[in-house]
Length: 124
Image 1 (cartoon, rainbow, N blue to C red):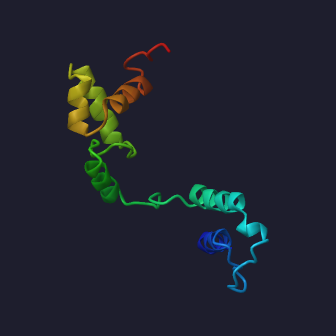
Image 2: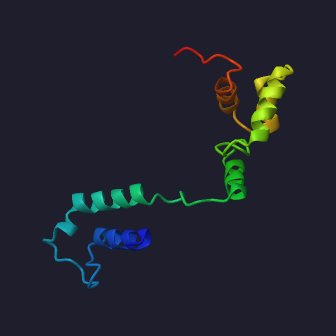
Image 3: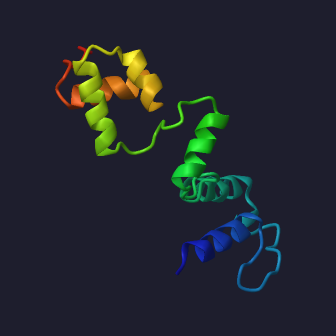
């Protein structure tokens, strides 16, 4: 079964409708119990969250800009960006400068420097 078909069936049940016949379930049906309805809609939201479809890299960058985030926030790191962090940090550039240049958050730059062993992890 395709995910889209499963989603349609569960949403139809949550609306109190028999997905096989299109008929409304009787008031005494478990599918008309408010707790069951909420549970079904919760499962739809968990299994098929809105806005979580696969976006292209350009779409993700645009969404980041709209949200006031650095352009590359949450995107995978390229080997070139990893090398730029290492060489930039090695030549004395600040974490803030690197974040601005690579359009990443300060946290992301910090995490990459730790991952590369260029700075020690902060104690918790």
